[in-house]
Amino acid sequence: MSKLKGKVAIVTGASKGIGAAIAKALAAEGASVVVNYASSKAGADAVVAEINKAGGKAVAVGGDVSKAADAQAIVDAAVKQFGRLDVLVNNSGVYEFAPVEEITEEHFNKQFNVNVLGLLLTTKAASKHLPEGGSIINIGSLVTRLTPPGSAVYSATKGAVDAVTGVLSRELGPRKIRVNSLNPGMVDTEGARTAGFIGSDFHQNAIAQTPLGRIGQPDDIASIAVFLASDDSRWLTGEHLYAAGGMR
Image 1 (cartoon, one colour):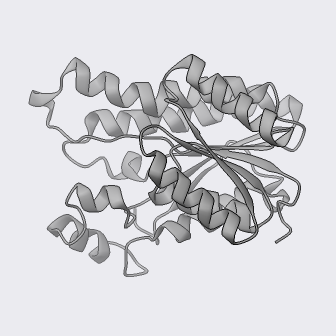
Image 2: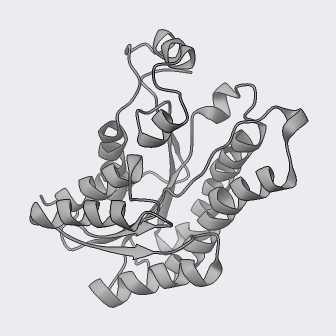
Image 3: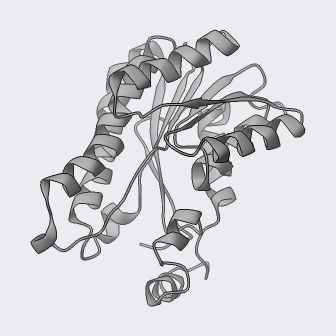
């Protein structure tokens, strides 16, 4: 419990799934964590309770990252509660699959507003506080390599995340702030189960195409986020780390 001792982290969309696992993993390494949620206060409170029970420090902060005022308020809450900010994990994301014939403005805007605009707004607010050695971790997706049918808009948002990561690594590099993308493959989360992916033919095909022979678990992604948040990755910026058991 020392890699992140004294650090303060924000994890957006952390009430469940990958975000919750990342928040708990950062706290286990000593970070004080702001657990952001958009709608599930109960989920965020449960994550905070688990962290605090284990001896860590965390608070739940509501806010829609696609709204500038909310994004700023999330960052302000971290600084007010813990006095500083060192790590930002841009995990908030939504996905909807649809063939091109069914793409609508609402389908497009919903995903781009959260997955891309939300990332930019939160980073804008956080970058004012991040010190030398700060780390921004953008959660992308293997979908940009797989480009499955029906994912045109979602894949486009994650392609944008990868591009933004490169741009921001150059913009913030002179301040010694690192920016990297962590791109999971298929992960067994509440969202994946609700969407019907777990147990489906898609699930079985993913396993068949994965050299390590299984899909990911949230903790598989969380441990990599700890690495990217810590000084162990001090010489990495602008990188896209694919966490998918070798699936390509």
